[in-house]
Structures are given as structure tokens and as C-alpha cells.
Image (tube, rainbow, N blue to C red):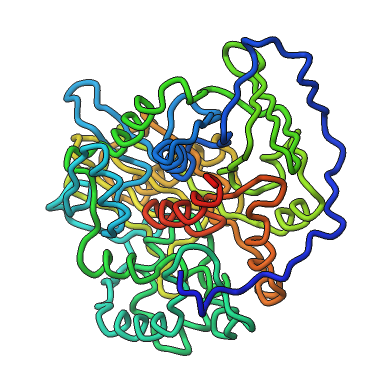
Length: 466
């Protein structure tokens, strides 16, 4: 990190006693039910897995607690049963940074430039998914000049390219204004469609503080959008987590959930429900890699400080999947374009596109919402959207769409108000690191991009390993 831009925290943990939570009685657990480790990691997604590997490399013992049956978080890969073809429908591409290339190299996974599992040589059509009708006379604008202007503005804030939220005081007013106003002020309209494509799951980007869009669509992402991103040469992003899982071995506890935690200056105690029964993890330190929404921390001994910060977060909804029987030809990419919206942005909640994959008849789906929706609601809305395409005559083949894969990435893109940012929210959030022997990682502490999450997590490891 650039030291001159790092905001030195003066936040003091006052009135931060933990609210009542279940006690942890070590004597209630037999030797076979007690797991002793240097570090307990809660969450085996992108950040948690990277931390586990990094801490093991530093000679530390770890226990990774993951509620799913696999590691990898938002990395979702489908294997076509007929052809064996892999389709990545969660995380698809990666920034071209040394952090990314060295991590994949460590597991002997080759990378290549490309678009991942999406089919090439396709024709795009532009449809308003609210009606199913083609948007007449719509054509994407040339973003070249707008990207040049965007890069000039982004260059004013080099701290947005660094790991974490190292904001200056005061936070520049341009970063606090709604992104739509920022776009108008600097003539960036021709870039908005592309920025929105990368910021899927954010909700209405035009009303969000500009800080979040510039942090997400920062220098590495801008470079990827203008040139190329990296993806796995074998088109199987889950291979990274499968190999990490094999290396971590019995240090990973899948299909497991935290029942309660107890943290103090002497260490941490974590009660975990595993398929083999209740386990007690005794560790010197704790790393939490969960979206910091209060709903994720039932049974945790959060302090009032932590609760006060996490309660300020709101979030969008993001959902990914693969569809069959859409009636959409394999060479057609159907993009959701608002016929009457600013910059023709797609209305949300709604799908961003139905995109062909390398498997004939299989369409990639990305769906966004300004707030959280249930899986049943999302699937029902998608079926309605496909039906509108047929009713409007845009797609002529009659079919009923079938979900062959689906995942919810919600809550997505946690954010707070411009007033909270101005008042020092991210200073206070950063001050949580190390308190009660606990460290925090994940997208809320940086951004939704694997390479940058790994880079941020790497900055925490020296203190955790100390």
C-alpha cells in the first residue's frame, strides 16, 4: 500500500462489549471433538481459501469452516454430462495481475486470454426484457473517448487501485456523488453500458456513490475491458479450489456451520456443527470471510462496534445459472437493453443477458436485483422473461426453459450511504482488523474481483501469522 495515502485509524473501541451469546464450555467436549489450530478460518470462498493456503505456506495450522460442499464461493462450474465440457457460470475471468498468475501457477493451472465458457462468433440482439421486444435502432456506442476520460478521472485516485479501503480525509466530493451525476459531469455516457456489464449485481449503478463504481472498475478491470482478461486454459475455474482442497486435506470442514464463537485476547473458541457432529475449534486467531451482514452472524459474539458497522450495510442481489430449452438459437446472444432508461441500462430486477456457451443449447444466465430475492422468485422471473421473448415474436421456437444449474451470490456488493462514507465508515471498518484476535476479509473489505481479494487478503497474513 502507498503509505502516504493510508489513513491512520484513530478509531477507539469504546462501548464494544459483546452482546450476550451462547457460552463455550470446553469441558463439554471430548478430545476427539476438539480441534486445535493456529488460525480458524470461517468461510472457504475465494478469500478464505487463499488465506488458508497462504497461512499454511507460512507454517501455520488452519481449520477452514465452509457451509457448502465445495470450496470456492462464487466460483461455479457445470460439467455437461454428454460431452464432459466444463462451463464456468460464476466467476468467469480474472484480472491480469502478478497475484493472479502466481496463484494459478502454484497449482500448475495454465491461464489464457479469453472469455471463458462463452461461445464466440455469435450475433447480439438487443431486447427490452420488460416487453420481450427488440429495441429498434439501438447500437452500442463506441466507448473509446469515454474510457479515455474515465481513465483520467480514475488516475486522480490511485488509492482505489490498492488493496482495501484506504480513503483520504476528507473523502473527495466527486467520489460521494451519485455515479449518474459523475457520468454527466465528465461526459462518460458511452462507457456506462460496459461498466454496468461488469458491475452486474450492483443494482442501479447510477444512484450509487461513485466511490463504489471507481473502486470496482479500477485500473486492472479497465485494462481487462480494453484488452483482455485471463481465464483458465482448461475452462475449469473450479480446478483451483479442487487442488487447494486436496492440499488442505483434513484442515477443511465442508457442509459445516458455526454455532457460536467466543473471542478474547487469549484466543478464540468456535463451536461448529459438522456432518460428524459438534466440534470445538480452539485457535489463537480467527479470520472471518463472510459477507458482514448481521443475518450471517447468529451465535457470534459480535461487539456492539461490529454490530453497529455491519447493520449499516445494504446489498444487491446477484444470481447465476444455466438454462436449456430457451428456444434461443445457439448463435444468438440476447442482451437486455432498456428502451427508455438512462443510457439504455437494463431494468432490475431482471436478467442481463441470455448468452450462448460452448455447450449447444445451453445458455448462461446472470440476474441482478437491487435487493435480495428468493431463488423461487428469481427463477419465476426468468421464465417470464423468456416467455415474453416468445410472445413478442423475438424468439419463434416454443419451449419451456429448464434450469440445469443455479447459484445465488447474494448478498452482493455491500455498500453504505455517502453520508456514512463521509463520516469515516471505512476508517472504522478497517480498524476492526486484529480486534479480539479477529481479522476480516472478503468483498466488503475490498471489491468483487478474485485477484484483488487475494491481494487484499495477502496484506493481512503477516499480522495473522505473527
